[in-house]
Each structure stands twice: as structure tokens, then as C-alpha cells.
Image (cartoon, rainbow, N blue to C red; front, side, top):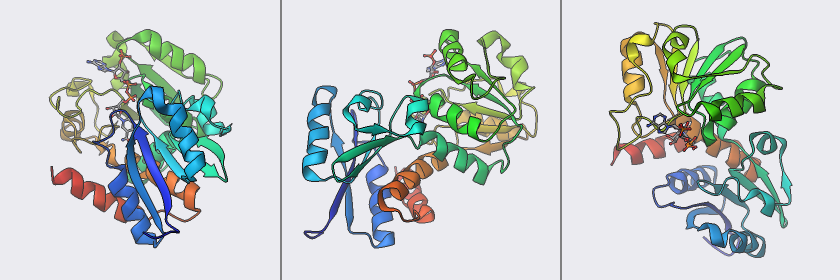
Length: 282
Ligand code: NAP
């Protein structure tokens, strides 16, 4: 670090569990960029102060995580089309005091799904279990890939219906179903994505479906990356499904942010190595 070092960071509440600082600092080291990335614990009542600080200190880039992805939006100067459609911001780029909000979560997810499990998503029939904040970004990114249909199932069916209504203009065949229709739906889709928190550490025994409902050759995908292989994925693999975990989404959402900030390709392999080491060291 010297007097030219450029500042970056992530904000959230809580934030001390975040693996973003080790991942991004590895990316700066690997590319020889004179940047430093740290975690800021920002509570909701200090969000405005934080944004003023970003402008005052010339912090070049910020990642935004729970619970600030929505509340940060009116504090920025410009919202990119992706974040507008998704209704949430996870990345801020500061260009000489002009703050632009982007959303790289869904794009990161789809890039990882295509690289690790299914290279062509055009025409695919996708079942999404869950309708929380992360689902919106995924719907946006899947729509851009020209998927054939999307079915959303959620414990609270009204939230699934809300999402289906919000994205119908982008995916005309999108629909919401209740949990009683989930068993039948599992046999009818090419890709099944768990976007619920069921199975996340420490509740690793939880799973969103009975694995007997899965047919072989389906792609089973989970947003969770702690554990790296959830019970849902382990059981799906036993049933002959191709599996895809959430680590790639985390890496690529960071990679896109790095590229927006620096204009340089992100060193994805090194970023993955660092995060994996940290997760396995636990
Ligand atoms: P969220 O907004 O809180 O949504 C949680 C979802 O899980 C809702 O659909 C909720 O259903 C469902 N759910 C929770 N407990 C349930 C239960 N006991 N039974 C049935 N459904 C249940 O969370 P989110 O931000 O969308 O995140 C969802 C998951 O994605 C988390 O595990 C998170 O770690 C992961 N994620 C991963 C990445 C990555 O980079 N890999 C990025 C973002 C998120 P209701 O609507 O009925 O409450």
C-alpha cells in the first residue's frame, strides 16, 4: 500500500463472515493492481453516511450485501438496466463521484451454470424452488439466455406469483406453483434450482425436495456454497443428476464486479482457489 492505493469494500449487516475481502485482495495481488478491499459493518441508519464517505474518500468500488441491496438504490446517481430490472444493487462503481449501481448476482450464477453444468440454456425448462431476493437476479439472467419455460415453487406461494407476474414480459411461459405440485414438476424440468436457504450451514440436513422425485439427467443446482455440496446435491448425484453448487455464483458475481471497477479480466481461477481454501480450512 502507498499513497496511490485505491480503496474497495463490501458493506452488510452482519459482514464478518464474508469471504469477499480475501477473494478480491487475491484478485488485486494476482493482477498487480494497487487496490485494497475491506469489509465495512454498516447498519441501516448509517447507509447515507457511508455513501457520503464513498464520495468523499473516492472509494472506487463497493459490493453491497444483505440487508442493504434495496435501500442503497435511491442513494445512488444512476441504476444500470440489470439492477433496475432485478430491483436490487450488489455492486457500486464510483466514477469521479458519480455512483452507478449494478447487479452481478444473476449474471454470475448463469455464467457459472453454463461453465460447470449446461453450456446452452436456450429452450431449457427450469424449475426454481424459492422466491427470495436471490431469485430475482437469476430470473433476469435466465431470461436473457432464452430459456423455454420457468416454473417457480415457494413455501409462500404469493411470493412466487409476484415474481412470475414481474418477469412475464421477459419470459411469457413463466408460472408459479404451490408446494403440492412440486413432486410432479420435478419430473418435468431439465434444470432444478434451489434458491431457498434449506440445507445451508448449520442446518445441513435440510433439503427442499424428496430426492425420489428427481429423474436422472436433470441438472440439480443449488445457490448455497456452505457446505459446498448440500444434501440436495449429494442426493441428486446419487439419483444420476448432474450437480452444480453455489460457489461459482459467488466467484463470478465478484469477477463481474472486479471487471466493472478495473476494466481488466478477473483472475477467476485464483479467486476460486482462495475462497475454496478458506471454506475448507474451517
Ligand atoms: P431470502 O430472500 O431470505 O429467501 C429465502 C427463501 O427460502 C424464500 O423463498 C423462503 O420461502 C425460503 N425458505 C426459507 N426457509 C424455508 C423453509 N423452512 N421451508 C421452505 N422454504 C424456506 O434469501 P436469498 O437472499 O434469496 O438467499 C437464498 C439462498 O441463496 C441462501 O441460502 C443464500 O446463502 C444463497 N445465496 C447464494 C449466493 C451465492 O453467491 N452463491 C448469493 C445470494 C444468495 P418463503 O418466501 O416462504 O419465506
